[in-house]
Image (cartoon, rainbow, N blue to C red; front, top):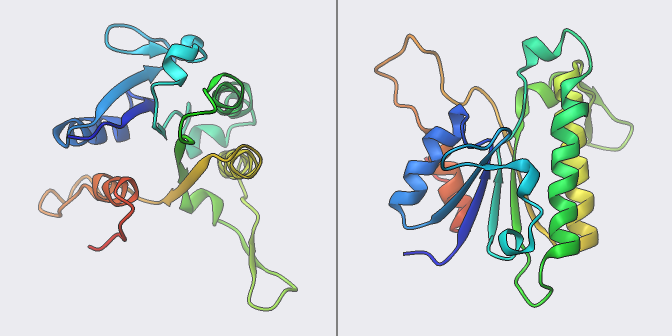
Length: 195
């Protein structure tokens, strides 16, 4: 049984629905949060309470309000909801968390396909620069940058998972699924991912 308490944002979503049962089976205590709260879910609006902030060891930040196809219709919801939520969450840990506690680990679920959609060779030897073509990829990349900056400034432990095609095709029922639970277990246990 683990003594770590995990906060899962986006807890009503598809990825969270795969992760939460697996983590509970492994003995983790889970605090679930979603945009609108409700039974068994905290609202994002109350996550800035010191009593909550000081309980949490690990944040699985899964909250994201759109998908690439919808996002491509125009810049908007990521900058209105997703990025401010991440900034507010990190700010709460920075200002409200008891400094005697271990740093919180924030695991952000990004998007490999959206961020690496447009790879451009750099003038630096062996470097490739990503310039996401769509709003979704730009917002995910910006979220990664926000988290990396906060980790450097505030001694967060940050992990960015750039995942792509997490579940495979729906019509391949005989193909094993479940990459996410294995990746998260590896990150939480600080072990390499072997599949």
